[in-house]
Image (tube, rainbow over the protein chains, first blue to last red):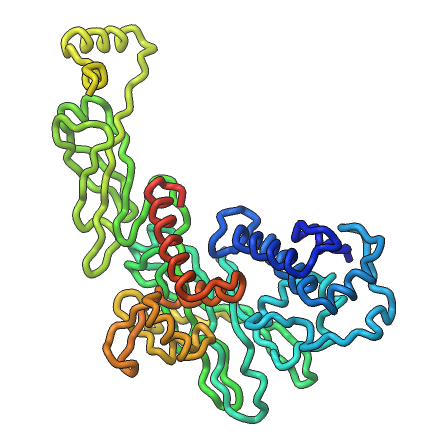
Length: 343
Length: 102
């Protein structure tokens, strides 16, 4: 197990005051909060911060950590000495932060666990962890209240998961197989994980970020209580050609200069098959044309916006070069006329 | 491994029409109703229906409630601050989408 330098994680000196520690944590937490941050490693950094702060904000845990950590460096192999914690009494179990669920605290490192973890008990938090699967999504959150009442009938927890689909699936609907994992306490009181593999239908016309619900497909209830519900959040896999906003889809369409200038009927490849579209004469690059109702299906369906992108043929060949020269001579065209007139 | 085939099962589309009741939203987010009511008062989520028993929420509210819960817990922001953060995050998401780096 690696020793973790919580002071380095928060970027404070070992003799920092509690106020300095709090300030450092708040500042870094804002920077790396997964809901706000765009940093690639935000999730990992944020967990590390939470763990470091969990220890250093609590004077008693901090003192214990300081004693154990004397002379240790980050990354060094580490075993807590036997009975190192004699004389300490960690109030409120391992995790003091209010509102932290078992799921969150489970993310803390083995190093943390070995010092302040499980054997000191989770207090009344109980167990109950949820959700992830095989299709490139994972997310779960729960507070695990379901194990606290013995014998009574308790409704199962709701289960949350993300499902990634292609834009094409939103046009047609799709079936997805996902594996959900949940925690379960067996007769001996041990935590066991249980897997459930479900095949679910993603209805046609879903939007990015949309949620759907399958009633009664969450955690089973206890003592005859009803099962929880399964909530799925739909995520679109990023697509090179399409951009999606709500049900509207934008696609870039490369066109030749003469197609834009003279008008043309072209084939636009779309998620549900190609569509014939008329380019009006005298179109410029960047012009947006609307294909009404060709976005993601629904009530009402979205529109598809086609952005023209004029692409010039290469002038490496002599005959093409000659044609460009001829156009230059005939058109008498100065694209910077406005700029040169000072407007 | 057994695969439970649920493809024939009805799917509630939570963003087409508001369907979530106050109770369902509380349960799904593991929060108290009083706190949800505060969020409604702050304008962070908007139910349809006038009386609380008639309130129905869109699925998007689930996301907003959870984000506010995390912001409050992790960063200590109050509800007005969380509301502001959510609005700015929505704006950033829209702008990112527009420049095509979503």
